[in-house]
Length: 293
Image 1 (tube, rainbow, N blue to C red):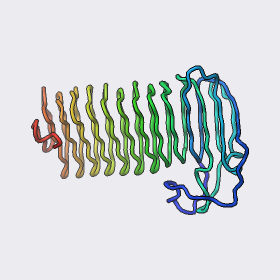
Image 2: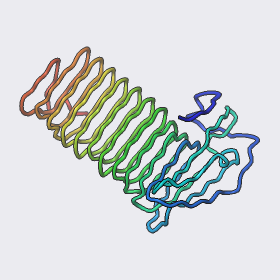
Image 3: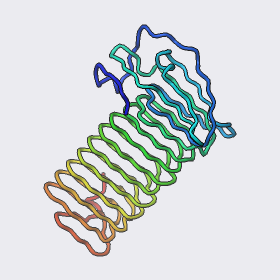
Image 4: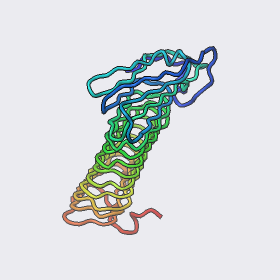
């Protein structure tokens, strides 16, 4: 866990100009391996994916107070880039560090405890992101594990394999396409997913909104609070939803053997249903009522 001192928590979402810091000479470093870990970084990270790249090439620029905290090590086939713990206050620039890592396609990537922005190319490999604040954009990957514990916004072009989203806070996650998908949100964060090929699991506690373009596979939904879930189309086989509070679930596709449980002012709407319907609570089944205008 990061150990930092903040004058105000608002700093996690902004960048301010610092004073009294000195620019250091650029750092160049090279490691080997087919996996990369970037840990505890405060700053901006760019992961360049270059066909034919040899090993892991690292470049870092910024004020010496930040670059001096970087360390580089090799752990088996994993290249590890870490930043030591930092204390700072409201007159310092949290994004003074700029870290560039160049790897070949197929390199696994993990980023932990990031405060800052990140741009990641088409790795076509597994990616695991744990961010606190900032904006992270990612190209095409195989599997993706995305975690946000603050105000981080994460965008992924496509996860050809499984996708896992776990957020607490106010961050937003957008993914163009994904395989089997699991979404867990506590707080007010939002998720927007395109086509889900495979199963879909959604668990919301709070006021989150989740939009999914389409699903094809088993679908299980749980909402506690005022969260809203909208799935535009597809075939959910089977379909299950458990809603308590003022939340809502709208599915514009076909729910197979739906099992519904709702309490409070929950609202559940299905465009179509097949098989046996088990419902404990109110449910609307209508091809027109369950479509967004």
